[in-house]
Amino acid sequence: MKVKILNHPLINLYMTILRSKDTKSAKFRFLARKISSLMAFEIFKDLKVLPKIVETPLEKYYGVTLSDPKPCIISILRAGLIMSEGITDIFDEVSIGHIGIYRDEKTLKPVNYIKKLPSNLKNRQCYLCDPMLATGGSAIYAINTLKDHFASDIKLICLLASDPGIKNVQTNFPEVEIICAQKDDKLNEDGFILPGLGDAGDRIFET
Ligand code: PRP
Image (tube, rainbow, N blue to C red; front, side, top):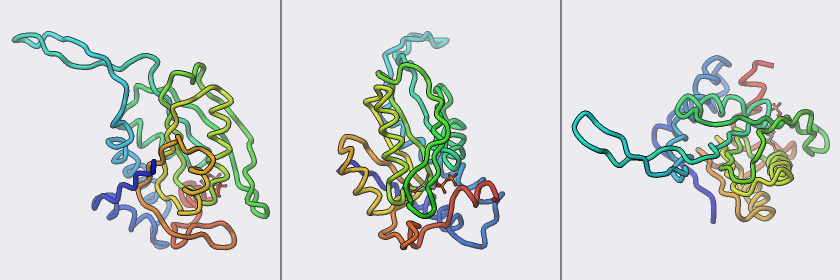
């Protein structure tokens, strides 16, 4: 199974505060960004690098440099923005793409309103970011969009994923690895993750 749930004590500590309804917008933003930064260590575990030799003041050092083309972070707007900020706080040698999607509240189907992607996704490592993987509809729409642009190396990065959402993405795209900070079991009839953290976009942007 290509699913990695981080479940790190530090992340679990911050996720508990993030989930609390008493956590206000500014702190929610701060923590969502911080957790995304912490996730960067796992996300970039297989970052493509090439050998590079540098001279230390004493002798040669056999190190590494980033391979070309550089990786790409793609945010699913709105809420994915906070994740790309947190990740690029740690590593910013990346191109950044945006796919604007909201979920129709009645049908729960994804509605696309903007798409801006870097060129040449074909040979790039693509990291698709959205704090919430609920039904999976938005992620599947975004992955299809990336594939339409010839992306083939895609990872889906979430703060919180649901079992049904993971299953939906895996059924459609078994090759896409899902990396999430935490996972919950179920959704309610409105497609919200339970116990979840509410609506991430509304909590981040105080709307
Ligand atoms: C939320 C969330 C995901 C999506 C998850 O976005 O940020 O993009 O719903 O649900 P799904 O897995 O069932 O598709 P929302 O529609 O609230 O838009 P927003 O980011 O603008 O708040």
